[in-house]
Length: 153
Image 1 (cartoon, rainbow, N blue to C red):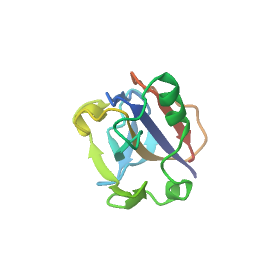
Image 2: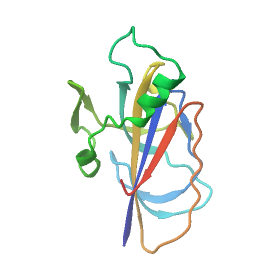
Image 3: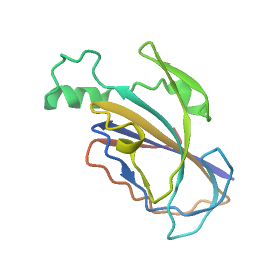
């Protein structure tokens, strides 16, 4: 049994990611766990965390280099990757954030809508995928801002 954890981190202006991918058969309510694949469908169940401000002060310089440096930082502590579940609290820079379940009504995870247009922020989307055997899959992700993907943490 192969288990994969898919993480997506979106930075700066959160417009959303469109996920056309790994269509998954079985899912568990209130979790973002998928078992089995069916081509041609979208992943609609995710655990979300955010928005986490990129800059501490409103007055901080937000030019290209400042944004690039912020994108290279990782606000979510590495030990949290294996502990993610709906309702779990995480403290980042002195503020508490909670992993929330999202079952998208359409084929997009719209961070702009989810976080009311938060600018200069980071958000995470997490899903667990379990496959019986290794296989090649296509994951399509889009964003008009920075994006990072982690496979298996």
